Structure formats: structure tokens, C-alpha cells
Amino acid sequence: MSFDILNYQPEGDKKNSAFFEEYRLKIYERRSSSGLDEMLGNMCGVVVQVETGDAIKYMAELYLMGPYRFTAAYINDTHKIYVLTSKPEFPRFFVLEPLNSAYEDDIKRLNMMYPLASTKPNARYIGEIFHTSDMAESRKTLESHNIRFHYPGEIENSFLANDHFSFSFPSDFTYNRIGYTSFEMEDYDALRIGQRFHLTSEQLAILERQDAIGRDNGVNELLAGIDHMATRILAGEREDAILEFLTMSNYYFWGAYNIADMNSSTNVNRNHNVKDDKQSPAKVFTANNTPSFINSFENLPMPTEDFVRNFGRRMHHIAIEVYDGDHPSGVKNVDYVVGKLAELKIPFLANVVGECQDDPDLKQIFSKHSQFSILITEYVERCHEFTGFFTKQNVASLTKAAGDDERYQHGHVFD
Image (cartoon, rainbow, N blue to C red):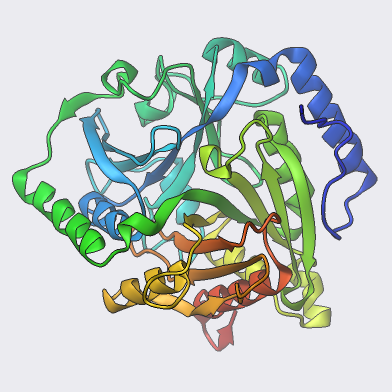
């Protein structure tokens, strides 16, 4: 049965404006009439940049904490580019590392504006890549919708603009980009993203040790793929950020819920063309319900907006799904994974939330921020065929835990 995107009624209790509802449907209609929906496929890649010298350490972290494994490496004029893969049908993971610590582009300039981002000025989630049957035509169509793109020779890092990848400018609302490619991801040499090079035996040994640790502790086999990715934005830009993403993708607005305890809302967008979100992970946007200067009257919690003020608009976390099941040790799989990772010195925020007893439910937890990417890793187990996307109670607990860890001390003020 086909999905009726125009008549779908979004889930949730977050009230959207008449403006949002009008243009949500207009965007769907324009995507169809312009041919964009027909051209666009699944999300086929995610891109993260780290500091010079951090790539191997970051990949070692990814080896222990997720299902991605090193596949190939390339070098261009400004960066080393590392490709990691999990299952063929899941997005690839690209790690970019500037060749020189003095490298500067718009990523560094954005990060330097915010106190807790400036400590790792080149580290940022850059964006995701969508497959398209025709990259040039997709770009032309999106440009007619006022989406701006980088062109070769007009940006420092050629990875973001070449014959095989076309990336948008950073969003004014999220600071994330979206890239497009018409090339399949099986032949990385064909992407021509740089000159291929090989890791040293010492570097390979570091990754192999991490892989062995994950296998020996029974963690690797329980980690599935990316379930969703969540960006934190400012209160007044929530609807604009969602509509912009819908304009640039083939996703639909699944729904939004108020998280009253944390004075925020969680807004979910999904790809209706896949049966499994891990084939094209959900995009989540989280925003305060009231901007900070208005909240000063109410004095409500606002960890979401504090994060944006301290780190900037950016990706907050990437969630990894843990296969549902009861572990032989007597706990749920996610509890086992988190317990083992904690023994291996991976730091977490608070405890696993959610029950997962006899009824469909979720169990979730946040790691602390990666010291290399500034991203949090979430682990989520969807128990007993849970069909929703999240629970309010879990989100409130996770948001509070992250907020307690993301405060910035300046003078005598504690955000």
C-alpha cells in the first residue's frame, strides 16, 4: 500500500502554525510536480569532520561504539578522507580530517563563535548525502527553490563540491549541509574524492584491537545501525528548519511532541520509502518552546537552547539501534551493551531510561560528548515491536542528562 503523504496527519501534541501546515503540503506538492521526489533516493552517507590528528582516534571510538568499520582512505588538497561502512543498505560514514591544524573554512568560523565549540574548532557534523538519479537536475531543481550550492573552485574543501558530490551551503537554521550524488557507493575510487592511500600497519592495528575488544565483549553483534540523528536549533526557527529540510529531501513530517518538563519539543521527519529507518535514518529537530530572553520571565529549564547558545546550531547526537532481545546475562541487550562499554571506560550520562518489561517500549541512554566529534552517541532498543518513535518520559530524562553536562561557566553565571 502506497503512502499518502498529502493526507497524512502528523503525530503529536505540538501545535504548528497555519503557515507551517500550508507550506508543508505545498512543499510535498512541489517536490512531486518538479520531479524531485522521483529523483531522490535514500540517505547514503553521513559526513563528520574532526581535528587534524584525531581521525584514527575517532575511528577507534566508532569501532567500539558502533557498527562502522574502515573501508578506504583518500587524500585531496586539504583533507584526508576516511570511508567507513556497516551493512551495504545503510549509509556510509565519511570522516574528514584537515591536513593542517591551521586549516580554516566556514566550519571553523562557525565553531569559533561559540564557547564550547571553539575548543575543537574544526570538529563538526557536516551533513548527510542523498542518492539521486540525476545530480545536476536535482541541483538545478533545488536552486529554483532558492537552495544554494557550493560549486567546484568556490570552496576550500573540494570534497564538498566536485563532479560526484554537490553540497548545499550550511543551513541558516541548523548549520548542517545536505549533499547529493548520483554515484553508487560500492566503488569509492569512482567518486574521485582524492588520491587513495593506505593506513599504516600501526594505525590498522589500533582499529583491529578495537574491533577485537568489541567482539570479545559481545558488543559488536548487538549494534545494528543509525536509527536517527538529532539537531538542536533555536526556538523561533523550528518550523523553518523542518520546512527547509522537507524542501531538500524526500522525507515527510512524522510529527512533534511537547516535552513540557524540559520546555522543548521533539520534531521527527522520516523517509516513507523504507521499511527500516536504518536504511535512511530519521532526522529529528529539537528546540526550546520559548526563546532564552523570554524564558527569563518564566525561569523554566531550557537545556536545548542552552546547548545552541554554547555550541551553536548543530547536530547533537547520532542514535544507534541495539537489536531487541533478552541477553543471556539476564538483562535487555541495551543494558548489556552499555554495561560493557562502561567497563571499557566509555562515559555515559545518567542511566538507561525506559522499562521494556512485557509491553512495547523503548530503552535509551546518551553517552557523553565525543572528545573528537563533539557528538553524543545514543543507544536505543525498541522492545517488543514498539511502533512509535519515542516516549516523552524518555526524551525528558535524556534531555535533562545532556543539559546537566553541557553547561558553560562564565563569570558567576551557570547556563
